[in-house]
Image 1: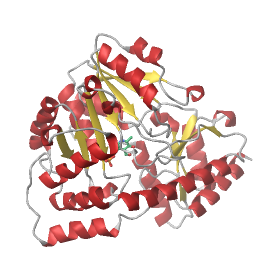
Image 2 (image 1 turned 30 degrees about the vertical axis):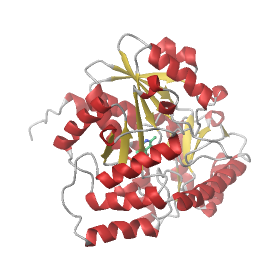
Image 3 (image 1 turned 180 degrees about the horizontal axis):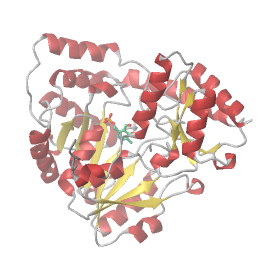
Length: 388
Ligand SMILES: Cc1ncc(COP(=O)(O)O)c(C=O)c1O
């Protein structure tokens, strides 16, 4: 067969390793292995019933046609109310665009902002799709290294040192995947001062906003002042807070001119996100407060349990996550790197974890606590046995 000449863009990226590991663990389970998977990037809880019912009603009423590319007016209205209530941010309808998941919102934002060679500053460890999306958009990822002693947060001077004349966008992800840490108001103020001074756009990925523990509070960087709001794209979505990963609904708020270009782009690439799913999302945003709080409590209990169990393993250390549902565990004392650790652990103890390499650190593995307490007990005890 003739060798296929693929595009340079696609030759630069590989498959998503987190999805690959989740699929591998699922397959092993189907084959009868007693797999414990800490690979999940999604809540294991079901979508609340009232949200499903709203989508079913819409479906039955015939809401099965194309709808406005940038989102249903009712959904945008609910998003505007959410931003005002939760984040102290005021947006109008033409400053909001709904997409097929936060991933899609982020991808579209990079597509409209980046030209060949533009640099995007990404704190490392990072969510694995950021650099790939940047590359697919012609940009160049530039990583800002962080470490455990700073709770994996960027220091202002490290950020400034990385800003070249080609730097265009800074990505902030709080709470973070994979580390679970959150930036507080004063840290965000420092970052925003630097971003404004150097004319950077900020993409603030707040998808884990609702999963924050110990009574801590989420701060949206765009809410700090008008100057930073004018250059910030705030990304959020239904996946994590409402357990709606498969519904594929995310949204972005930002300057009108950018949102308009994203609308143009999306109108040719995918058109509107699923129409009847958006009716379910309206209910979720308007009436989901209690359900979200319940799910958050479940995750906080699991986080505490996983911390307690990990504390029993001397070769593992971690920075306790403030939010999201991951532990980014340092396994360098085991003498293995993340990839080898993950491979051997799956082989010997049938426990699936994600190697830290894919998030920018070979010294770590990522464990998701989006799984039952029973699985957490069993899985961590198997890791302890593995290291004996
Ligand atoms: C940091 C981060 N941003 C965005 C996403 C994508 O979310 P969605 O399901 O809305 O596309 C994820 C999903 O894993 C994530 O971890």
